[in-house]
Length: 393
Image (tube, rainbow, N blue to C red; front, side, top):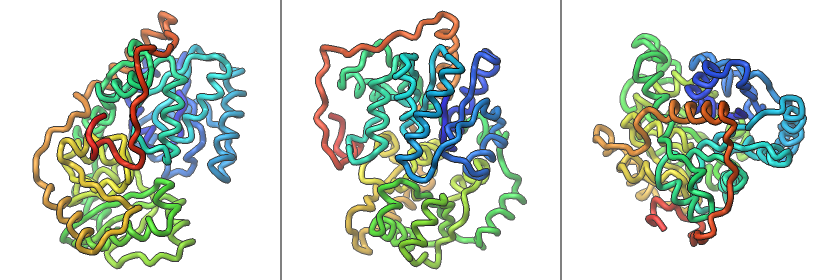
C-alpha cells in the first residue's frame, strides 16, 4: 500500500491494521514522502497506532512536478526489488500518480476511494482520480453512486466493489469510542492555547491549490471567516502559511492561525465548533458523521452526499460575494448546529470489507484485469459545477 498524506493515514488506518495482522511480512506499507514533517504525518501514526511505514521514499518536493517525477522513479526502483503481487493506492493526490510506475511494470493496481467525480477538469485531483481508476484492476467505491459514475465512463462493473466509507469506521473506532480523546482539562487547556475564552468557536482548514495559490480566493476565504461570530481556529498547512505571507494578506482579528495539529486535537476542535469552514474532502465527511455543520469552500465537489444529508453549505471562493451573501452563508451553517441528519456514507464496516477482500485476493491470486465496458457511454460533464448542486447526470 502506497500512501502519502495525513488524510490517507486516517482513512486507511484500520485497513492497514487488518492487513498487517493477517498478512504479516507479506504486506508492506510504503510512504511516498508527499507529507514529511512530524505534525503532518508522524503524530497521526502515533495517535492512531498505525504501524510505521516499511519503506519511505525520498522525493524532490521542490514543486508538484518534481515530486511526481521523483515519485514515479523512486517507486519504480522499489517495485523492481519488492516484486509485489499488487499495489494499493488511496485517494486522488500526487501520490496516486505513482500508479503510472506500477502500470508500466504490469503489476495489478488497486484503488481505494474510486470513481469519485467533481466533473471539474480544472482540478488536478480530478485528473489523478480519473487516471488511476482507468489504470486500476480492482476499485473500491464508497457508495453506489460512485460505482455508477465509473460504469458510465466505461469501467467494468464487475471490478468495482461498493464498500462504504472507511471514515465512518475510523471515527467510531477512535473518536466516539473514547480511544483517541482528550480529557476535559486537556481540551480546555488546548482551546485556551488557541486564545479561546468562551463564546462561539469555529474551525477552518484550507489547503487546495486552487484556493491557496490564488490571492483573490484566499482573500475571499479570509473575508468569509471574518463574518463568523466568534473565534476561528485555523490549523494551516505550511504551503498555506507561505501563501498568506507571500500575498501579504491581513488575518482578520477573530482568526487564529496555528500550525497543523494531530488527529485527536483536530477532531476535538471540529466536534466543539459551531461549524467548520473547509476545502478538505475528508473533513466535510468527518463533520457530517459527527453532526457538525460545514461550509464547503469549493467551486465543485466529488462528495455531494454531505449536501444531500443537509450537513453542508456551499461557498465558492472563486466567485465575488457581497458582505450580505457571506453573512448568509455563515448564518445558514450556524443554524444547522444541533439539527439531526442521517448521513449515507457507510455503516462502519468498510475497512473490514476492504481488508477481507484484499486478503482473499492475495491468497487466491485473483487480481482480475479491468476491461472497458462496451455498453457504456461517456457522461456529459458540466465543468465548473458540483454534481451535488446540479443534481445527478
